[in-house]
Image (tube, rainbow, N blue to C red; front, side, top):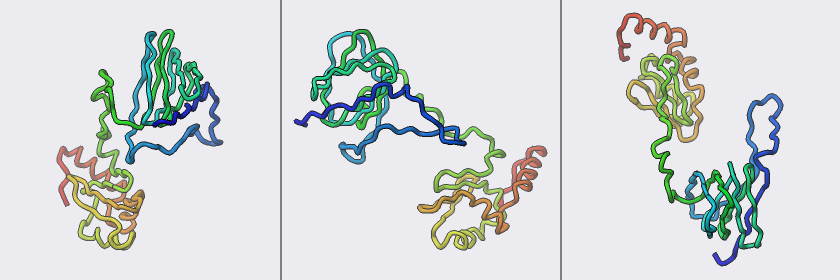
Length: 231
């Protein structure tokens, strides 16, 4: 990494107005992109950067980093240009492979970053803080679940498992969609086909109960205090 690469800095990036497309209530607003020059597949690591007044902190990059200042001020001396960037809340800086800098501050600074490197220093107070990904919605409400190219149906909703292979072949083609039992559910998977609408397709072939029939059946089980019988 003998060649030094200048930083990319966008002052006030976080303060610019972002218009929403007509009729939409959300949008993305990409403002910087590159092709990574690190090993593939590359890590993507997110974290926070905190600095207080003291000696300058040198860094020579063999990975990429996007840094967004949240509070305070972070001064960055870019050794490729000799320019010192005074980054304040709302400012964005991108560090390329080959960038060489020195970080400092006269007070304190706090920033969010995303980098193409593995974890170096885990946050001491965020270990294990990822929220549980297991659904907490009751089964009666989530009668079907579609996750990408996997689709789950309660086993109790399917009228005849023996005809599933034929139905899937008719609708999707031979070998395109497979199924297997997963506890009290039937799991459908495909490597190439989005399975949204699978339940409705099976309903058209009279292999699943209609929604009202299924809800009434489940309410009967709940009212009578007994579990549904397996098909």
